[in-house]
Length: 181
Image (cartoon, rainbow, N blue to C red; front, side):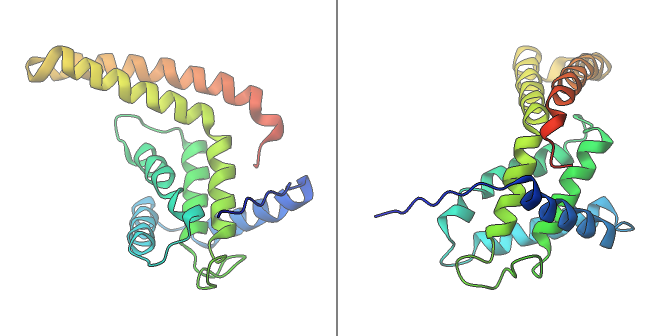
């Protein structure tokens, strides 16, 4: 038997999370992106091997891995503002002493899950564009195989990426009114 609990976060409630994210990123402002990425990978490995892992956390692991792939994909070249959002969320998630300390049984990751959900929603258009980019890249590689000139491949991917970046910028600008940031 499962139990569904839902609640509404007001703008005031979201303010607490905004503040926590800003503080997390400011605390490690001098950290290299690679350090943050290594830290989140370490936390993901640790969480994945946790037993028992609450289902509401386990369901978000693929989401986190997808966001991490988008951040680290060199051909995608995630724009700086979106990189900062993801890095702030990852810093928060990797911090065991955030709003709810992670070592509290069952609910320790609740605040982390909320942060991930909010950032994922905010980056919906970015994620859709990235998914389209990955699909284009996969189809291009299937169609042309290893025989394609690397310069031509790079040019095609660059053009597709630029179009998708423009699309996501337009869509994200329309969504910005309800932004976590």
